[in-house]
Length: 487
Image 1 (tube, rainbow, N blue to C red):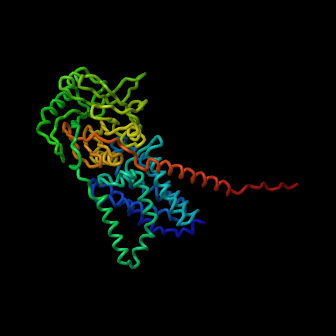
Image 2: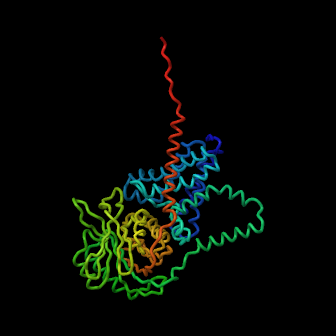
Image 3: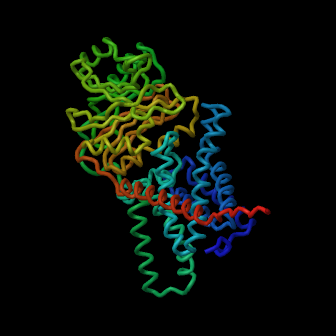
């Protein structure tokens, strides 16, 4: 099938679709992410799929690059604060993945036709999205389709996962023209009732949040305080403040009063290992403490580590950050991952951006984690929107695995999230010294959603499609016949 047979778009229509795609993307990622505005991400994907119908592969790639840059650059303006002019290159790297999707989707439609090619498009999207988010050196998972639905507390998120939701949205976008033609015709009464029943179920299961005050009472009360690069005196004063304040707090949306057993401080609270003074505080006050610091390593480097200090004043567990941030001095990657066999159950600890990578958190769930604790360093100078985007991750992970998550950030937005993805308690940005209390119910082990099997399959399908394109292009290259020389 030739490229001209895919009913190519005019430039005027393509330009309009590109503008609508960018607008829908930014609407979906507004700070009010728990409402129906998240549905705008569907419009973004529908427009992208239609842009694959441009006349040539090069046109699809270039338009995709422009759309990707217009989507990612404003949302990730924090890159400019952190990296300066180098942020432009990082924005382009992210935009290239949208360009690759449009180019490959165009080729699928051109080679297999609109109907059969459309069946391949969701696999291409999910394969590229998973590879971009999890599998290469510059991996970055934010701003994908699934994270737009953070805060919906949905059954599909727990069943399908963040990448599975993306697959479903793209599949819907491919079917949108067919669905549109179905609804423009006259519907029978039975069809109307069936459609209404499906919508009602979807509304109840997905849009209406799960009540956070339902279910068993908490069996672990956790507290934390937001501190950014504190000294030892500030740490001591903040811990004392938690003890003095706990009697005046009730766990938000819970019938449980506070009796704090575990305190969490952020990543890089300490500039080294826990001090004897900090261990003595835990022993004197009979509290467990999870605190971020640095563990020594061979040579001049270090391990970015979360230390667990028990009520006897000893470090009983520690976990190193698995994926140090690229271009930062963030220590060496973790040589191994283990779960902490705590007095309340198995708790997985991951540090900061580790929560963004399913290949990190999945391993903790496979080991039987019943809860995740996440010490996080989000610098206040990175801006409010960076903190708001990062705050989308914990509700999604909790809903995916069906386990609670406590995330303590240095300058906000700290969160206590129940197993349905409902944020029960939070601390604001900016919030130096602000406390957060969370009642967690540690019970059943977490489970992996279906997309943990679907997404690698999509990567394989995408890879095979690229190989097939390369082989067919090589076979179509005409051989060069040398001209006979004249005697």
